[in-house]
Image (cartoon, rainbow, N blue to C red):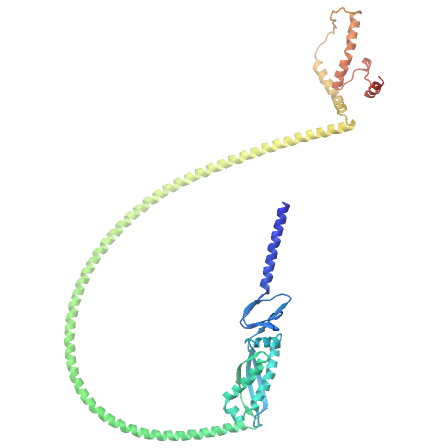
Length: 472
């Protein structure tokens, strides 16, 4: 039992250890969401300071490795560049909004882990903002104000190229550049705008005049062509109307003939259809009536079968109920009899068990008392028996006296056997024989636990006899 308990404890401990190891292994297996970068640093074994994973999962060894996540969520940066000098030394203000994020490109991720790991979003925004300010000023300084104002695509391309290359050095990527407005302190851009607007207005007026002229010429040519076309169309229309009218009359006649033929065929088909429909209706009515009779007959048969089955079911159910009731009553009576018999048996068993226990207790107490008596007389069982007999002697004497007290004894006569051997009279012989019987009587009394009267003799103690025997 102890060995099996030990085995159970050992097996349970092994199972618990395996379960704990499994939980530990699962807890160290880290999965990387799609919007984050998992940076593993410590002893990576790749010759680099860290190992970066954009998605996927990796097992992080305890003690020798640790991990952090870098967020790929885009970061919006407002850059309000004021007073940047252009190539013409004209100060330009370029308020814009840049959207950047931590790059997930291989190689750049490692740079981001070295430069930005552990930094908050605000710290990353401030670092990127300083780089953007510097590169935006550099781009403005390399371009004329006309280029900045007119060729926005080139300006944005230069900004994206310069800013993006610098941001990659710290592990960021440029997602979007949105230039809100371009302004200058001297009003040069506004003047260029007015010049362009005036030029556009003049060009528009000239274009409108030219279009009006072309419209008038085109309208006159169109009217001429319209009149010629209308005359030719009228002539063609008259010829076409005559031809069409003749064709219409012929077509109308042919249509009437076809209509008459069609009407005749229609009436014939209608009559045939009516005949077939009437016959079909009569046949259908006869079939319906026959089916109705058959259905009614089947319904009557089914009703009769159902009533017969219902009556049979009632009889069977009543019989089954009566049978089940008898079975239940019999089972209940049998169960009651079993319970009564079991109760009587339990009562008898308990009574006998109580009697046995009582007898056992009496015998046990008697044995304990006899053991105490033996101990009291020095451990000699013979003396203990003599003590018990001496204790019960009054009861024995009383019993013997009760047995003979109602017997009437008138006299006691001593008879002598008539032997004349030896000398002496009968009385002396009686006394002599009586003394010869004293030792046997003494042994008998000793066995019975009694003693002879002292006038018949006294038994010497056993110690005196034992002392006397060696001297002899």
